[in-house]
Amino acid sequence: MGENARARGREEDHLLEDDDEDTQANKYLFFRISKESYGIGIKHIIEIIELQSISAVPDMPEYVKGVINLRGKVIPIVDLRLRFGMSARDYDDRTCIVVTEIDGVLIGFVVDTVEEVLEIPESGIEEAPRFKSVSGRERYILGMGKVGEAVKILLDIEKIARGDEMAMAARVEQAAV
View 1 (cartoon, rainbow, N blue to C red):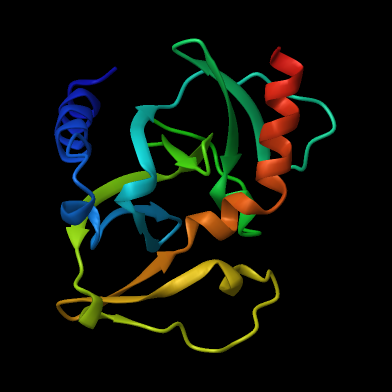
View 2: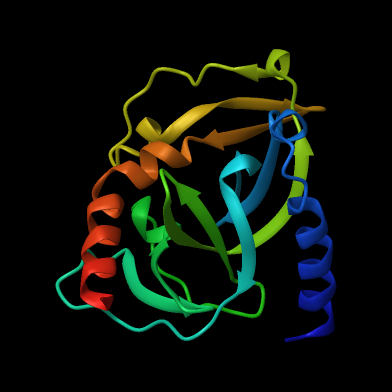
């Protein structure tokens, strides 16, 4: 692991250690996919890890890259870039896996790079505009966070995970037993 990745990991681990729900309520981890910045509620994040060897699982959608063994737990890995219908890209030293827990199920999401953790008060979040995209990606948008002059897309990670990923995670866990 490079020195930058180690330093970034230590900083992110420190940010994610606080289990107090009140302090996590309005905090979001922001990451980049292509040129866009997306955020997910920090309350769902278990950890951020560097990319590691992913074992392919047959008969899965293209965006399900496979599984990893993280300290004895088999975790399905979803490439968010592919999940959103974007073109694939080669992974590099900035590519990370954001490990989340939704309804007791661990799922890792591959992102291009992790940016930062920001607090956005409820008053700084607006409802997502009503539009229909070709990919259906808008159904995963929780809202639009205003950060200074910038607008950041907040994702509803529960909606992303509750779809076929939850079924896939259950199948992966069954296969691992």
